[in-house]
Length: 429
Image 1 (cartoon, rainbow, N blue to C red):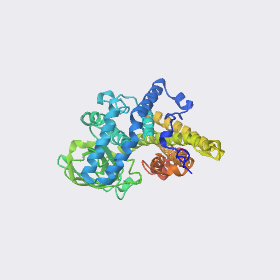
Image 2: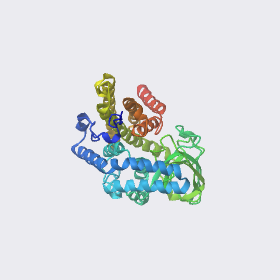
Image 3: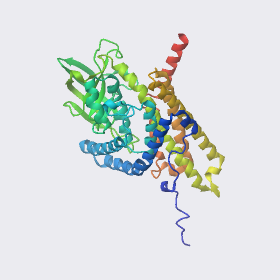
Image 4: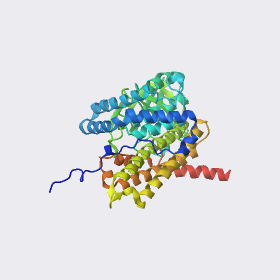
């Protein structure tokens, strides 16, 4: 008996031809201004045309680099991928939404950044993490609190992909509890001398500069004695002590444990007011959380798109599995969660853009979206079954990223704490 190769051929990712981005509801685009709708379609078309075809190859390249290289060689190769990606986005005008024209941006705002985040994240390029970290986490504080000299020196180069940045908060002994921060900065003459360690610094091994938080006054509560600094990574005393590969090593570019041994930097590298670092941090976190949410929704949307079309092609019991309520109802729930989560994120982005206090709203958004994304991607994995658990489809990588969202930028538990605290303050007047 001759084996029929078509009969036994599994459905491949290339068999899925539905264009990306279809599952964006009319209800969502109704909320967008005409300009925001145009941006959404432009960003999506660019992502589908220029990024998606290259994403799988870039993922393989990152995996191979991490398997074969270490130290400076590894960082140099990963940096090349990240910078090539950023330059491509810069040429398309997709890096400057958060920044005014005076510094090389286009001043479109937080909502525009969220729209771009969703569309680029859905394409799945590993360099997109570095884009988010370098341009939001590492640079938004310079825009809001930096001197004019700091803004002109760093922002244009970062928007062009020439300079990479990372945010350095977490330490081996501190995560959510920043009040236990051990890194110290002491003013000696006209130089700040910084000593400490920072851990889980995404992009830290690739960055040119760190936006780093340290304690500058030990006699005060840490939240009133913390300051922020711009620290060059090539400065004597700064060392990437260890590169940390997470579960998502194929998708993130570089995660580092960084050691600072009496790093002396000029006095003017202080970012924001002396002892005002906690406010700088809190201000950055609201924007970080909302853009992180929109990027995660982009990945979840891609997982839903793949699962939905796969369900129309996978035949079991003589019909597509989409015909079974166990699958179709699951898809319906995924779509409803995605749509609702996007609405919540859009609301908070509008508040931040308007300059309104949004700590509680950003915490609500982060908590709700993290749980929704996790459920959407988990359901997508279930629809795909065994093939979804393999590297033949990108859903397994999205699945791993989704789990991190419930930890990074503030865990679920911290978000609940923030929401409850603000709620009870309001009740008590």
